[in-house]
Image (cartoon, rainbow, N blue to C red; front, side):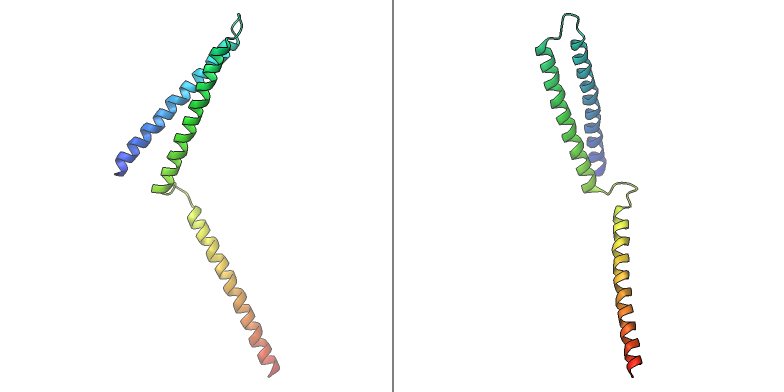
Length: 116
């Protein structure tokens, strides 16, 4: 799949998530209106709204997780310095190890010269 097509479909999925979020907010508002109903809330209406709300939240989470996962698989996050920081930390650890070995070698040489 070429990257232009992938970006377009990804943007479409994110646009659908945005529309779903708006619908979730409308459902939450519907529940509030029902709870404020002067004749009392209708249980079946609240149950339906809550069921739809929870399903939409699950759908949003699923889509966003997949979008984040696909972004990680195809390219690193822009402006992320994670890999370079880890690489630098590993290099520093290696350098510290080499320095400690050199110090031990220097101590051995100094002991050798002191004993002869």
